[in-house]
Every structure is written in C-alpha cells, then in structure tokens.
Image 1 (cartoon, one colour):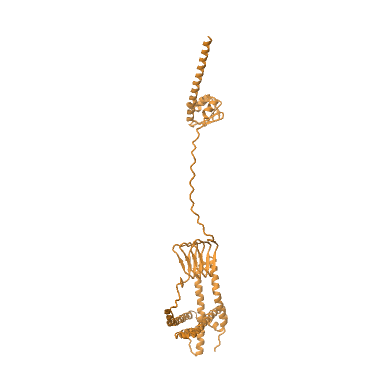
Image 2: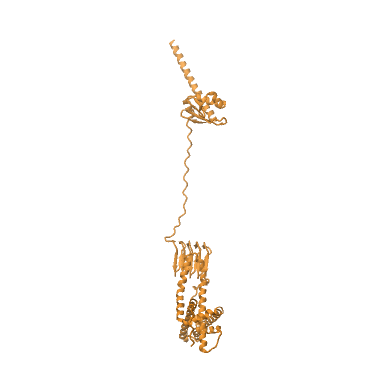
Amino acid sequence: MKTTAIIHLLALVATVAAGDRVTAQTNQVDTAALRSRIERRFDVLPLRDGVALRPHDSSRGVRSIEVTNGLIAVDGQPVTGPDLRQKLDADDANLILQLSYLTDDVRRAMFSAAPAAPTVLPPPPPPEPRAEPPIQRRSRGSRRDGDRVRFGESVTIDEDEVVDGDVVVIGGAVTVNGEVRGDVVAVGGGVTMGPKASVGNNVVVVGGPLRRDPASRIGGRVQEVGIGSIDFSNMRWRPNSVWRYWGSAFGSVFALVGTLTRLAILCLLAALVLLLGRVYVERAGDHAMSEPLKSGAIGFLAQLLFLPVLVITIVVLVVTIVGIPLLLLIPFLILGLALVGLVGFTGVAYRVGALVNLRMGWASDNPYVTTIIGIVVVLSPALLARILGLIGFVMLPFTFGLGLIGILVEYLAWTVGFGAVALARFNRQPPTPPSAV
C-alpha cells in the first residue's frame, strides 16, 4: 500500500511540473505575439513602473495611454474597461486590457529587451597629405618698402624685387624688370620696362624716351613730356685718315654754313618779334643800353636759378601726385622763357644796329634793317672765325680766339637782353635814354 501511494504521488508531481513548463512556454509565445501587435499599433516608451503608449491612429484624439501597476490612464486620466472601449476601437482596447493583466515584471521584461548593438564600422583611413607647392622665397632685401627718390643717378628694379611705393628719378634713367606698386617718374632720363615689369599706377617720362616691352604691365596712365628718343650711345669718334681728311677739307665749310644758317634764322625770328611786339623790343633795348650791368646781373641770376627752380618744381609736382598732369605745361614754360630771351636779344640787336647807323652816318628808319645789322655785328666774331677757318690749320690760333670772343659776345647779348626784358616788365619807370655819341 505504501509503495502504491508513493508512486501516485511522484506521478502527480511530474504532471504538475510538466503542466507548468507548458504554461510557461504558452505565456512566452503569447507575450511575444502581444508585444508585436502592440508595437504595430502604438509607439511604446518603457517607464519605471509600466509603459506609455502613443497610438499611431490619432483620429480619436487620444495622445497617450499609460499602464502602471495594473491601472490604465488615458491622457493622464484613469479609466475603466468600458471607458477605454469608448475612447479606442475594440482591437486597441483589447490589447491595452491584455497588457494591464500582466504583472509589472512581465511588462518590464517584455519591453526592456536590449536592442541589438549597432554595427560599428571602422573609421575611414585618413586622407593622404596633399603635397604643398614649394614656397618661393625672395632673396633677402628683394622687397623695398616706401618710395625711392634719386637725384643724378639711375635706378634699376630687378626681376625678384618689389618696391611698395613710388620710384622717382631726376637726372637719371629708370629700368624696371620687377614690380613697382606705385608710380614711376623719370625727369631728364628714360624709362625701360622689361617683359616681367609691372607698375601699379602711372608712368611719367619727362625729357626722355619710354622703352616698353609688350609683355610689361602698367596699371595707370602713361605720360611722356619731351621731344622723343634721341640716343647718342651708338655714335663713336673714329679718328681714321678718311675722317681727318673730311674734317680738314670740309669741316670749316660746314661750320661756316651752320653759322650763316643760324644768322638767317635769328634774323627771321627777330623780324617776327618786331612785327608782333615792337614796343616791348624798344623798351627792352632802352633798358639794355641804359642799365647794361643791372640787366646782365638779372639775366645771369635767372640762368643760375633756372635749373634748380625747374627741378624743384618738377619734384613738387611729382611728389604731390595730383600735380603730375601739370608736367605737361613744363615745355610751354621753357618755350615762354625762350621767347622772353628772344625778345631781349632782339632789343639788344636793335640798339646795336641803331648805334652802328649813328656811327656810320647811315640814315635808316627801317627797324627790321637796323635789327639785322645789329645781329650781324653781334655774330661778326663767329662769322670771321669761320671764314678764317677756310684757310687751313695755320689759322687755328686766330679762329680759336675769335670763336671764344664770338661765344662771349653772343652770350652777353642774350643775358643782357633777358635781364632787360625783366626790368621792362617789373620796372615801371622809363629808362634813361642813352646819350648820343
């Protein structure tokens, strides 16, 4: 009997254990299916005491459903089963009710499964370093900051040189093979630009040529003030026998022809001055005869100050940059001074001619003839020297001496005449008439 009872008891325990395993398997399958159905219809957010659900279908106006500790709350308000069925459709309500029947541990285990770890891709290899072009370094001292101003010397800008300013040269030439970021100004010299030359602003050339390679670059304007390019560098003195023969046989003839040509040109210009301004000529002649020393001193002082004043004026115009266009007026200024000198020379020649007429007893009221006579007298030493030069080498001492006298006499006539014009312009008192001899 006892043996039979023990066997029945073991059979009953085995049956209960088998039933528990089957029930556990069934609950596991139902839980997985329930989770899948809920996730298809709701967005699930696990909470510490439950879960929060947000319906995919928002047509019923329900925003969130919370299931915690077996209680159900819709949009924060607790509801019962019938209330839940009124707010949701039948399928959604049944899923929520089934979820509320589960224990907290089951709900937590159902929605707390750790998601699969994302696949971590290896980082991409770093890009290969790009080869940097070699830095071209200029030679030491190739960059010059500021302006470069030179007097009486030439300036050369090399190919690897950069001048961050202006280049101004007075009495010299400028050669640009590199870069000048300002202006280039040459007064009394030329400007040469190579194929790699670059000038940021203007190029101004006064009294010299501009030689520019077609590949060079100028950022501003080009202003040339002068009579063009005259290059004497290719002229050479070749003292061979042929040249000496031509110099001895024909040199004096050419010199005489040149002096006669100059005499004719002076006579023509003096006649033109008399035609246009006889009053100024006579006033200048009167001052020259009455105040020769004073007129000569003024003329000599004007000659001494001419070049410095001209250079200073050009420098001021160049430095101010704004005055660079006024450099175009410098040739007209020089032409005006030459005209003043011509008026003075004509006045001196006129009075010399009148004095010769008086001494020789010639009665001539024609001012043109009187002026021509005066010009011939002033140039007579030079004419006589040229005529004696036709005889040959033996007359060299006489021709040399007369030539010096001719240069001195003509120089005095021009100097005194220039000063006489100045006196006639600024001295309003009439000159003392020269005494008749």
